[in-house]
View 1 (cartoon, rainbow, N blue to C red):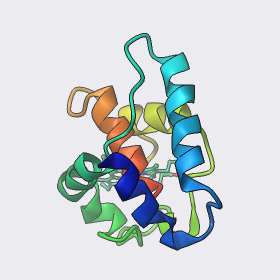
View 2: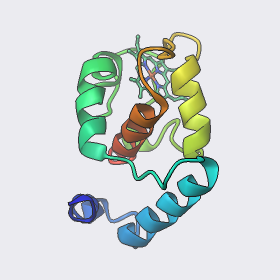
View 3: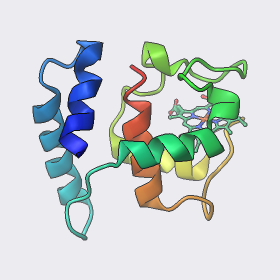
View 4: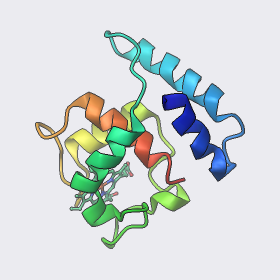
Length: 118
Ligand code: HEC
């Protein structure tokens, strides 16, 4: 199921081998978390995005809010998942903190979804 979704995502053409990228991402994450390897669930991430993020960031990643990054241009996404996780959890300037609202694994699902915009 997940691999099917990722290959849908290869329509962006930018990632020459999305499946390998997914495997590498999953391996990297298993190194940084003590629990079993965690693969982001981008469908769940998409639902969370609609609820918590799209009011500012736009349904397709083009922001409504002045000053918010344009995810379709990759703004703000050129960093490791672990760095993005901290920013989304703690907030940044006009971007609110989601500490206590979203769990880390939900934020990782969201990050998986954000990466589909670019
Ligand atoms: C109230 C509006 C608002 C909401 C809601 C919001 N953001 Fe943001 N977000 C911003 C703004 C504004 C920035 C730019 C912050 C800056 O760089 O000063 C930003 C920046 C970001 C960045 C780039 C961070 C970086 O290091 O440059 C990411 C990733 C992000 N938001 C993800 C999310 C996610 C995921 C959600 C939902 C859980 C979310 N945002 C909800 C307004 C919002």
